[in-house]
Length: 312
Image (cartoon, rainbow, N blue to C red):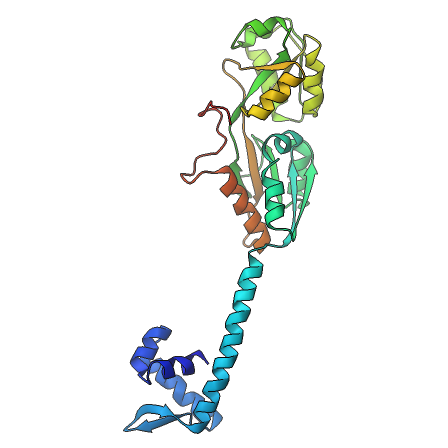
């Protein structure tokens, strides 16, 4: 249909029509001959072997072709418009703290822009999230580094870079020190995430390396609970932090301050998914939207608190 339309609109100049259709002139000529022979009709008038006009039947076909192509182009426009609102289902496993710190804007904005999207969020600690991903219960997981996943089987991208800090009450003796050393923690009881979290193992290594006289009193995977326990005691919560104004204001509201550490534990939430030959259109759209949100145009991280110390 497009061939017939283009030949007429090119003034029956097959060379010009072929250029506009991105085919060779010989291929276009062969198509015309085959179409007329297969259907036992003549749609073109010829003089000295050259096409000069349409036959009466050719004009009838040309009118129908224009109507059909107009409808086709309208359908294409409709599909394109509808595709702007992506629809599909995706299941994400994410650590509660990462969800709280980094996803209060992205997920609501994404759903509002794509109301047909069905996003199921499963909050759990890094270890069960990792297991769910490996058991194919999740499309995507966001867990703390190190992920302990095989790099040949899983695609990984850091979403932010920050550091673990000491969270203490405003009345805590250590509040007089601007930046703590690990030795400053001697004699104080610590609280942090559960033993299955990377931060717990890294904290144990720090205690051992610096030969600290302190212990991890208890653990929890509730960020809010851990900082609340520090607000009226001399406990020290060792937790990942961000340099968001709202985060700092929330700490101040409960009477807690965050103290940076010398040689800190680095906190990097990782976006991970299984490597596959093909992903669904919606899964690819959502995954790429995540990367576009967390990465700037120069491919640097939007939330790199190790490099950029300014409030966000």
